[in-house]
Image (cartoon, one colour):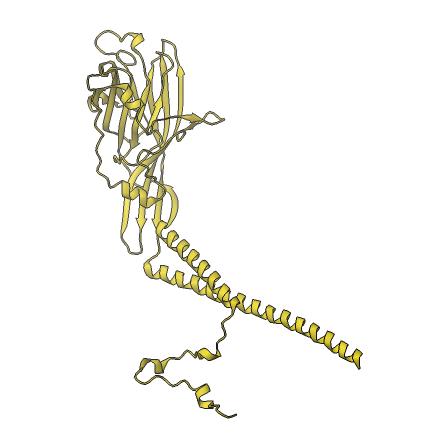
Length: 374
């Protein structure tokens, strides 16, 4: 044919001065031989949307990491257990006794090791984060009933716990009275105990243990309390424990509150792509609560009975390294590209098949009409 250059059709000479383009091993069609279709544009949009969604999902999953929970028998032998307490009772400080008695037979006068400060009940009851213990249909305590975080910082993942555990450990200051009458006592601080089963209790002066002086008037009993902090192990004030921010109101002068806690040593660790690991050693506990009015022959007060489980929980968060993450993203995007290409090819083939059938039907009708005219 005139004007047809066969060499120009098959040969694609590199542009002079472009040395790298001469080594291009991927064949490409010239623009004049490429046909843009509406179906191809639609599938390109679908492929882009799916790719963005999967890329965001992979990035979010990599950022959160993967958590693994492992239970094992506690190998290390520890003899000490630290308890961190911050509780406010609606009684005067001089009228309260704080003691600990454990399975080892030791009797610890905790009142001399903890701080006691006069405060006002309204300063604690009206503060945010206070909630009451709820109960399910079986009577078990629901420690999270009505709870809302004051700082709005959740502990959804291990890296959140690692981050907030780095905050400086300090006890909050007792609100000033500003001329108001102090009607309550705040007891707070850390105490080193034996790592055995024990009973930490707060009772009234002259009840439960012999003490000099006359007994406290029974009409002064009011063991309504607010637990701002109750944890075991190193003091991390930002970690939320089951009894943190709990309020319990005594329905009578002789009222007994019992908290049964099962303590599980816990290790939180974060392992990145490298060999570095960040670790937090702490303790978790499950709690059940029982409160009731008692007669004058029994001892009213707050009783925290704790027991240490012989197991250890290891919660580890790990995430892939950067090269591994990039390889996964490339594989995902490649899979989307191949899948969309096959879908586009299939739809184009179906469109051509349907178009040919319609054309054959049209031609058949015209041919039959021509035969009739002859």
